[in-house]
Image (cartoon, rainbow over all chains, first blue to last red; front, side, top):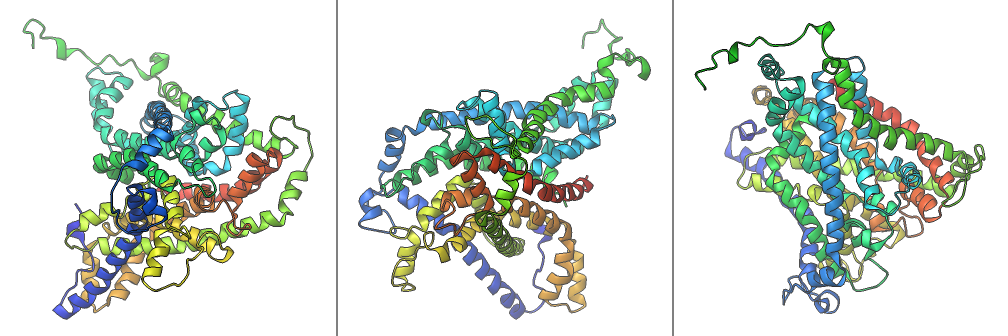
Length: 288
Length: 310
C-alpha cells in the first residue's frame, strides 16, 4: 500500500546507509520499550497469584494462574457490568448509525438551503468535548427522570456518537460517485431506494468503520457513566473497574484481569476490521 | 428473463417534472425530513443543555434543591477562587507539555515507520495498541505500573541500580504532574503518529530525490520538504489535540484524582468535584459557560479548516 513511497531512502554509500539506519533503529527500540513496559506490567500482573504480586515479586509469573480472572468474574460479578456495557454500546451504535446514515445522505446528496450549516453544526458538535456539556446533560437526564438507568447512557451517548458517525459517513459518501445512484433512479429507483440499493452497499466499509468507532466510543466512555449511574448493578465496565480501586486493598490482580477482559472486544474489533477502519478514518476524520 | 414481457426495460422513467413532484420527493423536504432525527437529538442533547447550563450558572442550583437567581455570584466566586485559577494554569501546562511530547514521539514514529524494514507492518499495528486500548484501561494500567510499592517500574529501576528507594511517581507533589503527562502521552502519541504517517505518504518522493541531487542533508530535507508537506496535517492534528488535551478528564481523575494537594488538579476534575461531588451545580455550570466561548471560537476555526478539505 505505502511501501513504494518510503522516504529518506538512503542514497549513496554504504556508510551513509548505516549512519542513517542506526538512529532509526534506536528510535524503534526506544518506542517499542515505551509502548511495551506498561502493557507487560498489566499482563503479567493478571496472571500472577497475590503472593507474587505483593510479597515475592517476579518479572515473569512463576506459577501462571487464572485466579485473578476468576476473582473479577465470580467475586466482582464482572459479567453483569460487561452485559450493561454491551447493551449500552450496541443500542447506541444501532440508533446512532441509522440516524447518521440518513443525515449524511441528506447533507451530501440532496440540494437544499441550509445543508452547509447543518454540516458545520455537526462538525462543531463533534469537536466539542463531552467535558464541557456533561453537567448540563446531567440536568437534562435528571429532568427527564432518566437518572440511574442504562437508557440515560444510550440516550446521551448519541450526543457524541451521532456527530462523529455523521461526519465520518459524509466523508465516505462524498467519495462515491453520485452518477451510480442517478443511474438507478433512471431505472426506476426512488431516491431512498437508490440510497439503500446502491449507495449503502458501496459505502459498507465506511458504515462498518463508523459502527466500530461508535461502539468503541460507547464501550470506553467513562465520564457520563460515572456521573449518571450510581447503582452498582447498572454500572458499565469502566466505572466498575475504576471503582475497584479502594484504598490499600489488594485488588490489583483482579483489576488488571478485568482491564484485559475490558480491552478484548475493542482490540478484537479493531484488528478484525483494521482495513475498514483505516479507510474510514482516511475518508472522514483527518484529511490532508 | 421471461420472454413474455419484452417491455419491462422500455418503461420510461416516471419522474414528474420538478415543480409537480410529490411532496416527499422534493429535495428540501426530503432533506430536512432525513435530518430531523439527528437535529432533534442535537436539540435535546446540545442546545437545551447549553441553555440550561447558562441559566443554572446564574442560580444557586444544587442537587435536589430548586434554583434561585443569584446574578453573577457564581462567576465571581469561580474566577476569584485560587483553586480554579491554579487548575486553569495546570490545565494549560498539561496541554502544552503533553502536546509537545506527543508531537515529538508521533513524528519519530511516523518517520521510522515510513522506512522499509523487516517487521514494519507488525510494528505499525503494535504502536497503535495504546491508542486502541480503552482510555480507562490505559490509565488504570499506568496507575499500577507506577505504584510506589509494587509497581513494575520501581522494581525495574531498583534492579537496574538507577534508584535506591522507590519513587512516589503519583503521590509526590513534584512528580505527579509529569507522571500523569507521560501516561497521557503514552496513550495518545500514536494518533499523531498515524496522522503524520498518512501525511508522509502523500509527499511525492521526487521532491526528496531532487533535494538529494542538490546535496541537501537529512535535516534540510526534513525542514524544507517533510514539514511543509505535512503543514495541513500538522495544523489539524495540533488543533484537535489542543481541544482534546485541554479538556481531558480521565487521565487525571483515574491516576491521581487531582492530588496530591491539588498538584495535578486541572479544571475538568475541579468542575466535577464542585458539581457532582459537592453538588453545587450552579457554581459548576459557571465553568463550562466561562470556558465555552473561548474554546468555541477555537472549534469554529478548526471546523473551518476541516471543512475546507471537502
